[in-house]
Amino acid sequence: MTDRWKLLQEIRRAAPNILEAEVTVPCDSVWFAGHFPGEPILPGIAILHAVSEAIERDAQTRGETSRIASLKRVRFTGPVRPGDTILLHLTNEDVRKEKEVNFKVAHGGRIICTGQVVVTKTE
Image 1 (cartoon, helix red, strand yellow):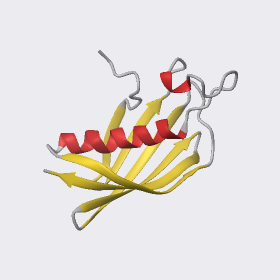
Image 2 (cartoon, one colour):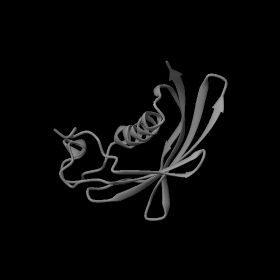
Image 3 (spheres, helix red, strand yellow):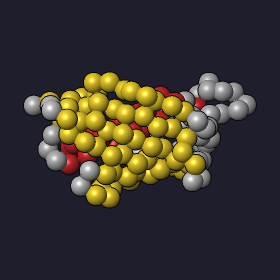
């Protein structure tokens, strides 16, 4: 059974420390329920969920598990509507036992969300 909350479809490594992912938001996505009737907009938490999915999927491909420790400097600057395709660009940097992942999310060539995720590696 497919998890109705997952949005991520494709993920690729563009460079050793860069991930790119693409998400086409289904018009009937559960994320739109009640947000907002007559003017559906993808909630910001759904965008952050897609970023988290990309980080987790990448860790799994390397046989690792990870846990998001914190979010920093998250900014939303534009809406995502049903049927839109968004592109995620994640750049990571290992710092001590943590990894800092800076991300940008774009739609139509315009940045609509930016921020940083601090990820701890778990054993």
